[in-house]
Amino acid sequence: MGTKRILLFSEIFPPKTGGSGRWFWEIYSRFSPDQIVVLTSTDASAETFDPHQKMKIIRLPMEMPSRGIRNRANFRVYWRLMGQLKHIAKDNQIDVVHCARNLPEGFIAWGAKKFSGMPYFCYVHGEDIGISSTSRELTWMTNRVFGSARKIIANSQNSQKLLQNDWAVPSEKVHLLYPGVDACKFVPAPPDLAWRQQHHWAGRTVLLTVGRLQKRKGHDHLLRAIALLKPRFPQILAVIAGSGEELPTLQVLVRELELANHVRFLGEVPDTDLLKCYQQCDLFVLPNRSIGKDFEGFGMVLLEAQACGKPVLAGASGGTRETMQVGESGDLVDCEQPELLAEKLTELLEQPEKLIKMGQLGRTWVENRFDWKTLHRHAEQLFYT
Image (cartoon, rainbow, N blue to C red; front, side):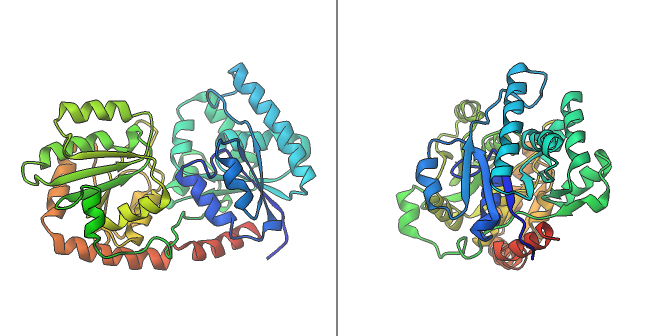
């Protein structure tokens, strides 16, 4: 392995929540501290988080109203960050910049390269390039990013195909690096009756879902499916962990469907409590669907649930297929219609022994393929060759 000094440039990074930020922390924190510098956004909790990290973290204001450059406010932020990135890379003797997304990080690195010649890699998560294709402006910006990037790192085979088919990126430029899970932290646990009783899960069939409350996550269709299921499964309970812009709409839907006794909104959940939720639920559900060009690029939460020995059900959209052994550790269903989701849930919930077997297979699947230790070795080869 070489001695390149890498600057990870990501607006989303802990303590800010988000699957991509957690992915980056897990991968880059495993490198030697003198190899990595992180440039990320300001955060109210950074003062308590940053001092405990071995790698150097630099924080700058990165907020902008949208991703385009025709907006004057956006353009000023892009211009400022291009200059700051150039100086930070020089001051820290950076050899290559790793951009978390095509926009805004990739375009900022593209601009900085025009001034300094600094090479950069760019990550692609799937939904990011889907959204970029909806606008001529964003498409133009993204094409500039991909054209000048040294390597493009896709989070799934689905993202790889999109890059090659929709964006005409040469296959030799695209490299696969899956997100993963800490298989030593996310582990199965026996039923904890006291904990379930404390959280009002006792005697309930608990369906857990974790993720930002946004339309493509399909929480609304999960609620409609629960309404269809409750006559047959009167003790069913949907537990929804996460926050987001769809919360008010979902709360109204709960009232309209008379599901107050069948739905719990947990909001943002601390890691220790979230682990317990994974371990004590009966089935993990990610009812994702495509909303225009917005779709689920992968689904790290599906790995976390399987690592805890839980069966998973996900929408047949985006890259979720790659997180599981379909039909073995988990299953896929078209989540465009709540009726289809309800049918699949009924099929699974009526086979409790099959659910247990699926969870066991899921644990082995994730342990062998998606543990961070294995993925870190892949990242070393990718970054330093």
